[in-house]
Image (cartoon, rainbow, N blue to C red; front, side, top):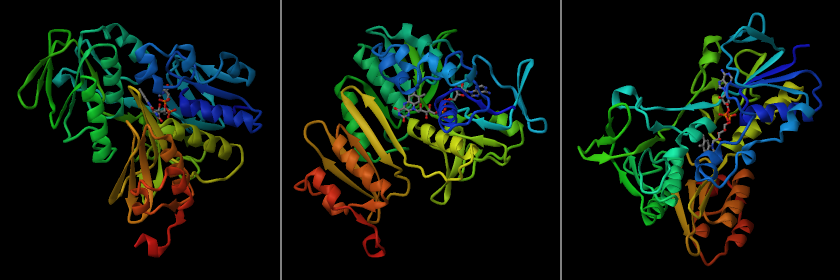
Length: 412
Ligand code: FAD
């Protein structure tokens, strides 16, 4: 029996394998990863691991014995080069592995700066893999000058680590504000103030003209013609789903490997899970870039492969840690037309996103209680009226009891 073959030994791949076994699938499961490591979690790469506070052992998703105990065959350091759908085999070097059902869990790769603007110089890094972070560890020495290109979550987390370790950090963002693509002004303002307070120079509305240096980066010319001296650079300008294998195999691609509501691709024997997969939501085709989604989507694919038939119900959530601030996000804010900001005690704030009266999402900074309330309400398809959320005389716990189903009247 050929069994289940999973390409990609990351968060989603691990979720597929573990769930299929837990559901009683007794055939062979083979998980193939191009990285040399057993499946590990990526979030600490730009947080505790980069800071030196989280050990390597704590990154692994499972104890080493788990894979053996569950008869999950891990082939590591083994990039899959091709999928042959006729013979139902995947090719890694000279070796071929047959599958009955194949799962693509290939994740994404970090976007790099083109060589034309200095992206190939030594001392220019991205943060996607453990190897990326291990390679840049030597650079993090107090007093050195770090330039971060891109004011998204990964860039901001790396900036926080740099500032905490005593580096001189400059972060440039070409959009008018950091986090513009993902968050409201009130959230951007919160994080700008936080970073500035820790000595990070945040320069918005400024692009990178090019990095300079001979062999190794030593400077940067910015779009306003200013120049910076730099010791090293971290590029955090987003990610691209790894779809080449799927596309070479003739599968349909549209903002990721296209899957139906059950996680199946355009070939009924091939599934896709996690960041590499796109699926329909709210009239569009989206991909989600979060641990919660990789786990849930992987589990759904496992369930559907072993005989259930349930559609995916995304319950998006995300977090970020910067200095002493924990940001928790529930829901998706796309399409919001109204924002309510609720200031908490001290260094806490929550930002609630609405479309008409429907609560879509919230960002909670150091405010786990608002996060829990908002998450429950969003996942139940309920709402809390904006005027109640903005009324800080109503405590957070009581907000939950005010949740209502959205009716046509309240949505108007
Ligand atoms: P991955 O975990 O990337 O796994 C895919 C694996 O497939 C990789 O090992 C890849 O090398 C391998 N692969 C690809 N092609 C092949 C091939 N041809 N052959 C063999 N193997 C292949 N999410 C949050 O929710 N909160 C956070 O705070 C957070 N922080 C993050 C910080 C960083 C630095 C990064 C990089 C990500 C962060 N994320 C966070 C996102 C989260 O880690 C990802 O969404 C999640 O790992 C996606 O899981 P995945 O299995 O789809 O992809």
